[in-house]
Length: 114
Length: 110
Image (cartoon, rainbow over all chains, first blue to last red; front, side):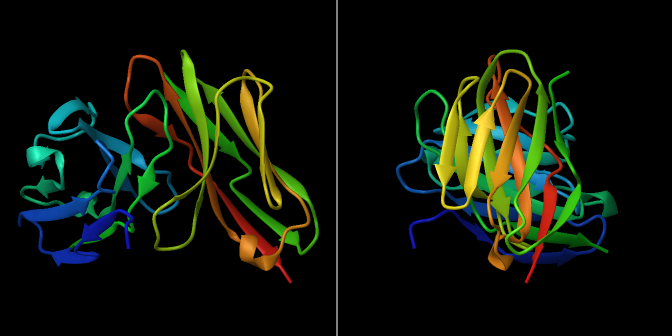
């Protein structure tokens, strides 16, 4: 399968714990995005990488959230000191370089904070 | 502030009953308007990209159109397997982010 993959698919954690999610984009795509989606809402932009450089972050992104993309391949999203409001689906998407291109989404990681 | 609004929130159609979904956008410098389909528990699946007013794209029973203020997704003679949430998104000049609407939940009854 050459699509975008995300792990884990589901994560249940207790409030205050740290969690980390991984995204493996389509191999030739140099653009990578993280989104958060809650029930009944559309995906909400979190951050954007072009290769290994993080070029844009949402102003809504708390300092408890951090993302990396070492070597411009896979990416990780870490949430520190989780809160119940962090419960959501976390989606990763990738796209090829160019002017304006469609994004290809992974299946998402569903986070539940108890 | 850039905004994308979709209507209706939910739509129930009988099989074969054609209809249209609306996506209104208020953005500065539209670079692209995207339509996605999302099934429950899955990531969005790309359908169409539209770049300029007057442009139309078609795929099977779906046709997307774009004006300077809104986009429509026309569904002709839908089937139950077309049931899903349809999302539209816009990307604008000066940012890399894509702004999504809240989606239209479509249910097609056999």
